[in-house]
Image (cartoon, rainbow, N blue to C red):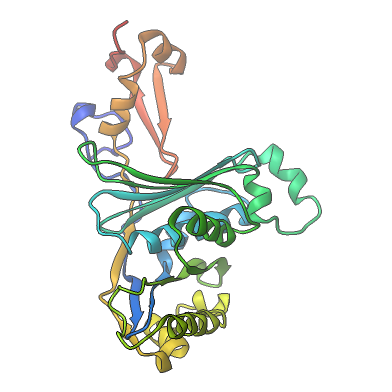
Length: 323
């Protein structure tokens, strides 16, 4: 059987075979929870080996890889809080050495992402040996969160300017300015002995009419929220990325005295959705002259930016857009 990335007897527009990428599912990738009768809900995200499978598709500097891993964990955690059919994405575009950062997660938990780096601009930033911040990598630009439920549904998108030194800080700016929602976010990504790992802890303050205790006044709600944030702030990156520490145990360490209630966990999986059919559709939008310029020795190679696989198309088999 030929590879889905190579020309075959099956017409390209019918070839939806999954490319040769890892088939990984993390059954408890996202653990939602809430604090009983308190104005706090949250999600614990731990990508486990899925982080390594996604992040090692691209050979980028560790600082860039870590930023991409944080974006993946954050996106998975935010998507799990929504009721939707389609995909939820994070996109950061700036004028820095990493002009594009993208991660998206479907309602079924299929996760993918990448960070596009310009090595010639990244080298001077790394020259002093210090790990550059997310702000230095991205530069000035915008951060967008998008929920796309298909062409027949309105697409929701929130956009804010990139503000803050870390992706955590940038996310906080978004929630304060666009959603007017009190949040606490802890993101971590690092290369461990087991490979790359990424995780997130996200807390959100529930509105007063969100089902919390009727006997709790505003002052009590404020105090409950401050307590939850203070406890969450004791979490370390090492704990968040430790495969040997189950997520349930970690949450009990943090919130067992605050009425912790675990909700149904959500699975995450390797989610690149590229195929010959999709890329052939992209090529069909180009004119004949453009296709001729793309071809090298009669072959056009299109590389999926998510899984970093090159799909080869015979130029003679492609028909460009008319006019």
